[in-house]
Length: 111
Length: 121
Image 1 (cartoon, rainbow over the protein chains, first blue to last red):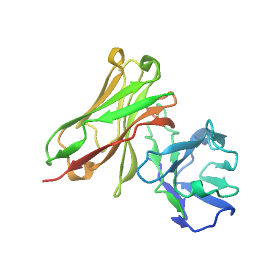
Image 2 (spheres, rainbow over the protein chains, first blue to last red):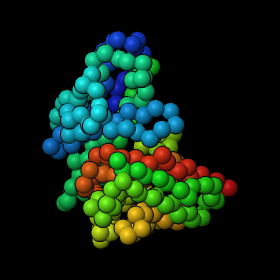
Image 3 (cartoon, helix red, strand yellow):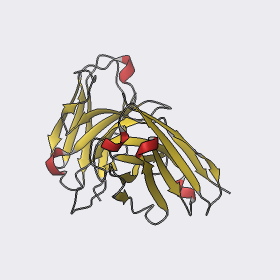
Image 4 (tube, chains in turn purple, red):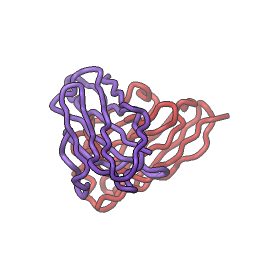
């Protein structure tokens, strides 16, 4: 399976600052099949980005995704108070016949 | 909007069984693949299982294969996860989630609120 490693584990920033989160894959993520989620305490993850750079419905444009192959980045251009949360990347490049299951990174906490 | 509501979580002894349910509303379920994803402090977020629109094809993580069974009833707008031979490391919050379209590997646009399963003696 594809192992995703997120860095840093914790990012300490202030509102208005720029956040850059990284997600590295143990092997190439086919067709940029990588998503980003935001999770707040006690809630389910919320989709932010799919296909590495496509913002989900109603996601503000201060969130942007980039990257390909084995290196991906989520950027929050100017942090708002509601953006302090944990962020996860997820790859979904497995399809028949590879059978590679979808996997998630370990998360980056933005505090 | 899609609404997913899990139920059936609880405390179970190692080796025991539990059945999670997910009530789906806001969409025509027969048009959508569905999945279960779990989250624990030890294992993080982990895809567990997926099922295609008709229930004809099912997919499982290696960690649950042979112990868990995913099923659905489109007429009742319900999804289930039968969990047998439960182990301590199955302890997690289990989310019902709707993949974009691919039951085997896709991003998840809708999630339920989660059901806590605790496996302990």
